[in-house]
Amino acid sequence: MRVVFAGTPDVALPSLTALLESRHQVVGAVTRPDARAGRGRGLTASPVKQAAQAAGVEVLTPLHPRDPDFQARLRDLAPEACPVVAYGALLPQSALDIPRHGWINLHFSLLPAWRGAAPVQRALMAGDTVTGASTFRIEAGLDTGPVFGTMTEAIRSTDTAGDLLGRLAAAGAGLLVATLDGIEDGTLAARPQSHDGVSHAPKLTVAEAQVRWDHPAFAVDRLVRGCTPDPGAWTTFRGQRVALGPVSLFTHDAPSLPPGRLLADKKSVVVGTATGPVLLSTVRPQGKKEMAAADWARGVRIDVGEDLGG
Image (cartoon, rainbow, N blue to C red; front, top):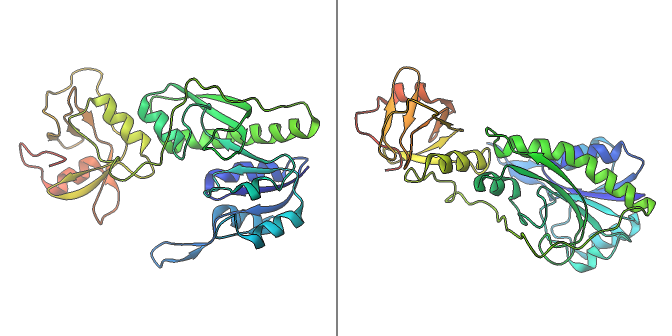
C-alpha cells in the first residue's frame, strides 16, 4: 500500500523505521517546519525530517496542512493511507479526505481513555497500572475516531514518562504496521469507541509541573515521574527554581518532617510531604547543570529548618 507518513519528534521514529522495513511503500513524509533550537537558536529539522531524508523519502513541511499547495502535492503522491504518530498539527477535513483509507493515528493510550496531547504523562500522574496504544482513523473530533487495534503495557512503579513512552513507541510501531496490513488485506475493520471510560489528557503546563509538598508522597512521586523529562518537575529554594529528577518513597524508618522541610546528610537529601518524606535523586539549580541531590545540598549548605517550595 502506498503511504505518506506524518510525524515530528523522536517518538515517531520507530514507526517510520518499521514502515520503511514493511511491505508498504513510503512515498512521502509530512512533518512540522524546521524550528529554532539549541544555544545558537538555529533552525533545526525535526527528527522525522532527518530520518526520512536519510532514507531518500520526499518530505513535506507545510506551515499548516490546510495549505492548498501541500494538499495538491499530497494528491500527486496518491497515498492510500497516511499513518500518523505525534505529527503535532490539526488536520482539516480537506486533507483527511485525500487518502482512500484515511489518516491512521497511533495514540499512546487505550482509547477512549486519555484523549489528548499528554496521555502517557496523565496516566502516570493518575496512578494507572496499565496503559497501552491504539490505532484509530482520525476524524474531526479530538482522538474520537473508530479504533482498529490496541496493545497493552504495564506501568512500572519507577517509570518516568520518557521510559514508558519509549516502550510504547517501540511496541506501537508493530501495531501500526499490523493495522495497515489488515486494512490492505480487508481483514481489519475499525470499531466505534465506547462512550464509557472517556478521559482527557491536555498538554502539561509548566505551572502544573510545580511540586506541591503539601500533597501526599505518592502524589509527589507520580507528578515528578509524569513530568520527566518534559516539561520537568520543579520547586523553589531560596527564591530560585530547582528542577527535580524522580524521587524515591520510603518503605520504613522514615524521618518525620513537615511538608517541604529539608533534611540532608553526606549521602542523601530528604523532603517532607503531607504524609511521609521522599528521597531526592537529582536536582538542577537554576542556570546550572543537573547534579546529585547530596552534592547540591553540600554546595548550598542547607540550614536547619529550611524548606523547598517557599
